[in-house]
Length: 331
Image (cartoon, rainbow, N blue to C red; front, side, top):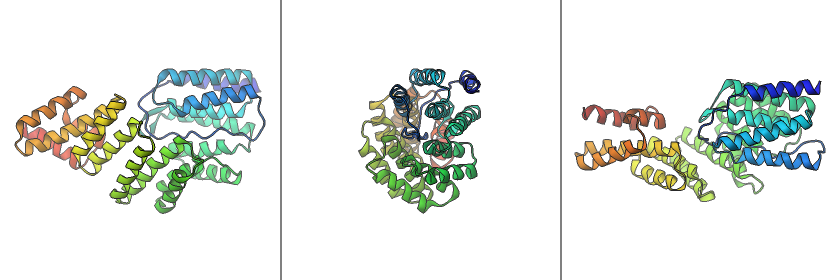
């Protein structure tokens, strides 16, 4: 029976296409703990897998290496519940299609892996925490809530429990309780880097939905102060400055800084969008020479037309409207 269970999961691995894109702060990375004793070699290998998944930022080789280690662990011991939970995390990461969007087949494979982990160890609290996250991604909030309640009843100590709860509370409209949980993760000394960064992201979403933009701004700056070498922090702040506050000059500054740390694709899109917004303002002010320079730099970063570039970063709103008007005026 155990070998058949492993065979099923091996088929899931082989069938799962690894569609890799730039990663945003979306994925849970619970700390590794299990309700049973485990051999030291297994524990070391699992910690290596967890480290690879925790630090994954879109590198195909890193994700492939994690999968290979998991396959080896499960060949050695198909009943090793922590490996099944980490396999679920692998499937979630492999299925990310951009932002908070994930491929349905990868999420289903992750669910199979989690169900296997919990069938092997029904008291595995961290697996229930990850299940709460997974069911939110699958838009199954009742099952997410049930999983998180089970994790709490089992005494889960994972700081991700608060973050995943807060995400669910945000979706249910319980913003104040969600904010309290995000702040608890940010302020807890025991919180991992990944959990704290996810809490920063969640707290900014809360403040933006509540229209408390100055407080959202402060959280973005707090995240930068916490991790100043992370390009994504500057890029995320630039998106907020551009798309929410229509402050293209500050957005240009932040996105330029992001690209000095990492020349990542989303960062180039963000800077190009901010430059196109500057171009629109310069055209409106009849500063044609400056407008031409802004447009040329933006086009060097992103080949898409101005409106398409801005729409990919900001969606509908005043920034896209201004760029559309400038495009029409320039014809």
